[in-house]
Amino acid sequence: MNSEEFFYLAPYLFSLALSLGIFLYTWGHRHVRGARIYSWFVGGQTLSILGFIFELVSPDLQTKLLWDKFQWLAENFLVIIPFLIFALEFSEYKPRSPRLAWAYWIGMPVLFALILLTDDVHHLLYPNLHLAAAQPFPELEYDFTPFVYGYSILYIYGATFFGIGLLIWRAVQPSN
Image (cartoon, rainbow, N blue to C red; front, side):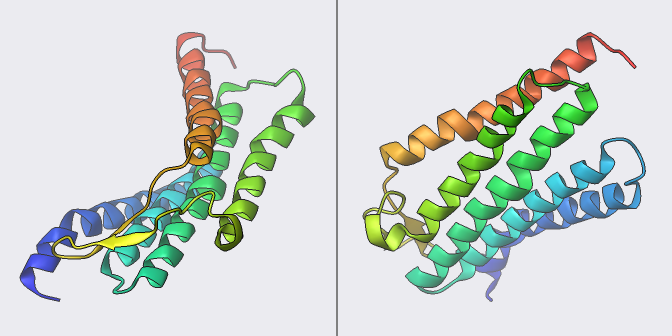
């Protein structure tokens, strides 16, 4: 690795080290209410950053694609779901229909994972997959499909804003 590549990766490596430190800290304090599930959230973020670094340094298209899929899975199962659980636990919110809510919150990433793992057949996620000649590492590029936009809006942003809303609600109206 030359100095240009190292300096390009330095912010990502710093982010990885910081996230790993936060993960270790929260896991060490997992007996505190919400800390155990928050450590899963931070662990998912750490894995996602690690996957991004590996995607950057990977030399060929197929390896970059593998790490991109790894990031999708880490974000869906180890970031979004733990964040929702953390927000629900911390805010003490009880959904009106818990089975329906969990069917949506778990079913959407499972469906997405199935589509992700079978993308070679239908290309709903990775159409026009190619490497861009960027420096210092070639970048994985693909067009975003309506499926990706829909999933991002309905699930990723929806779940994130719902969780943030619960945390804000908790901060404004403290209870037990």
